[in-house]
Amino acid sequence: MANNKQQRARSAREVALDALVRIERDGAYSNLELNRALQQAELPRADAGLATELVYGTVQRMRTLDYWLERFVAKGLAKLQPWVLALLRMSVYQMVYLDRVPPHAAVNEAVTIAKRRGHAGISGMVNGVLRNVDRRRSELTLPESATTTEAIALKHSYPDWLAGRWVSEYGAETAEAICAAGNEPPNSSIRINPLRAGRDAVLAALKEEGLYAAPSPLSPNGIVVVRGGNLADRIEYRNGQWTVQDESSMLVSETAAPSPGMTVLDCCAAPGGKSTHLAELMEDRGTVWSNDIHPHKEKLIAAQAERLGLSCIRTTVGDAAELPEKHPDASMDLVLLDAPCSGFGVIRRKPEIKWAKSPVDVDAIAGLQTRLLEAAARLVKVGGTLVYSTCTIERRENEGQIERFLAGHAEFELDPDWPPHVLDALREAGVVRDDAAFPGMVQLLPQHFGSDGFFIARLRRR
Ligand SMILES: C[S@@+](CC[C@H](N)C(=O)[O-])C[C@H]1O[C@@H](n2cnc3c(N)ncnc32)[C@H](O)[C@@H]1O
Image (cartoon, rainbow, N blue to C red):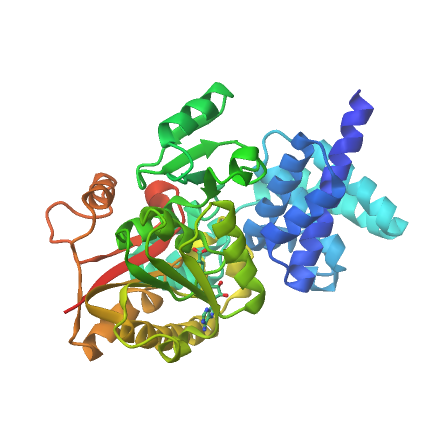
């Protein structure tokens, strides 16, 4: 029995190691890579859980792990083969951050993997480094003389430039809370399709199965599920009762609040999470034009619409900057621009983002957002609504974008008239202050509700 367990645990670590190498070497996305690796390996559920924790944890804590490892690897980390470095990081991650893995088990497993993959010299080095780390744990400290930014960045494992940006934009306390929240496991949540199911009935059914499921405070059709496994791999998903979606994402279409019969445009729509939500809120009456630049993503949107039984969604493919060539000016009751962005609000789900992106990327994406916003605005009817959202927390891509746009467009104004249930939830969580006038835009941070960091602005065309 014990042998079986060790065998399975080893497999979990090997699967995790291969995924880590691909994420680092090939720039693979952690969530996609992990899904692929887990499907291929067919690990038992507990081992799949361990592999998931090792991949996310190691990518999340990479900077801190490297900072400590540098002290123990005489020739320096840069000279190590990628798989050896990934193995050392993954092992120190277990020793420091995972209470349930005894340090000697982490060391032994690493040495076994090293023996299997490398020559004796490598396994000896791995053994020596990890045993030293274990013996000299008291030396795994952070520098005392660091600046505020360096201290936050090293403790929570972020690049200095990113932590520094948040310190200057939000203040040190909030910046540290953002960084800490980015290392927490994300909630799972589903959005009930009211055309196919009722939230209370689904809640009751999930609870009957012994799952912890609670109504989302952010969306009347949202449910937060704890340890529910893959919620997209269930019959209720396949027959269109629900969509797996983060609560912050749900809030976007809730804020847009379209009415049945409207003509709506979702400029950057794939894979269709918000388009299908808009269509559900419209009771599948009217038209949702659902556009994306990538031809291969069109079928993702169409598949979601079909699964959910929504016939009012019409897909198009093209650059959203050119949408005014496809639709007459001022023809839409509602335009949603869920813009491509730096993605810093979803670091919990894709931790490699913090290592892959640079300030240059933020500048480039902000330029694209400006162009898309200009095009989207042209299509909004007089008296109609423009919703701009991103899954990032960069002011330049969010408030900055809206302020710049309003400065050049006197025909638009911020619309503070959000659905009361949305504003109540934001007030209750302290995201929107009771004592100040609501400006019509909001920045959700990952620590507010445990949901993704999102920005939402609602504008009205005068
Ligand atoms: C944030 S995602 C949209 C998520 C989607 N709204 C949802 O809720 O499922 C941004 C999307 O914009 C698309 N995109 C990027 N640049 C674009 C452009 N210039 N025009 C249209 N779509 C674009 C990407 O392919 C990506 O699918």
